[in-house]
Image (cartoon, rainbow, N blue to C red):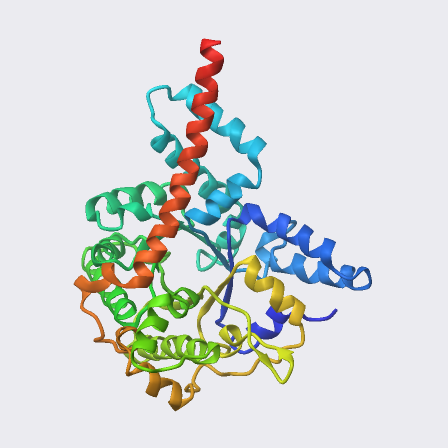
Amino acid sequence: MSESPIERLIKTNPDMEIWWDSSPLMFEPWVQKMLQNADPAERDELEQQLRRLYNAQDPAKSIFRGCTTNPPLSWEAVRGDIPTWSAYVDKLIEENPDLDNQKIAWLTYKEVIRRGAEMMMPIYEASKHRFGWISGQLNPRLFTETEQMITDADELKAISPNVMIKVPASTQGIEVLKVLASKGISTNTTTCFTLPQIKASADATLAGMEIAKKNGTDLSNWRAVITMMIGRLTENPVLVQQAERRGIHLTWQDKHWWGIGVFHRAYKLLKEEGYPSKMLACSLREGPLVAGRPRFWDIEYLAGGDIVYTMPPYALTPLFEIGDIRFENKIEEDIPASVWDKMMKIPYGIQASDPNGMEIDQFNLHPATIDTVNAFSKAFTGLEGFVQERMDLKSKKVHS
């Protein structure tokens, strides 16, 4: 039995976790696509490797230890099975004639999360509630509404015991993290790109945990992770614009070394300060070519860490295609000094790299935050549009 790249990766640290980054409903369609595109001579071996990632027959034996999802990925799950979700939405509309498209869309979004949580539940139960979590993200359009985020978090948590709440690292989201931790609700910080956001998130979570302890709140099934969206940080056009104004040329390698370097600093900070939160690597990008051979630095240079990787199809597919990467412990290694030298001359670079690079009241204005919130908000709008189409169709039938 040959090992997959994922199996070789997790050997670098027994506490490392690999999570599926999409709705669990999308795992089987991805597997089928991988097998269809595979060399026939390698198809059987590949299928065995993929089935070990998520073992549908015995989920508790899966390599995946959790799942992250977000509004775009949930919307993708709906679009991936329009007949099923059309029937589901039509029933909701019929049973709830007084609800508008936004509220029906919210109920549909929760159902996508519920079905995913059900698929992960055997992992949750077998691990005695340590693994098997699925992240349910708060409505990104409400990332400045503290009380509404707390209310919605309670609602999402009620879906299933293994739902972890995805909270934005916005100015208001930091307070929400504290409140949820004080209530013993597990969280995953999202829309998070910079060291100041990561530190503020860790501080808020720790403060909430201390309140929970004082109140006698049960924390036995509680945990917190902090997502750093590496690709969404390094690819933002503001970085290049600011660099060019200062006569600094940034290569692809510079930007990706820097993203890795910021993650390294965050990992070291949480580890040395004894925070309860665990770093989670997200928005991983394949590349570069080194001596004509494909590499995956965003994964390779975080190997060896007690971290979570969350991997969507667009990361897993090239990782399996590259195949022969040898993973070593790289999480403690620093990036080239020349990269830090460039980045510390660029405001965007300083903001992300220095724990004091931004104040909490600046988080909502960070370019990566603005762009990501807008992208996630469009997904909610797309789901609401789908519901509205079903409502309009029902209305036409009634009046025809």
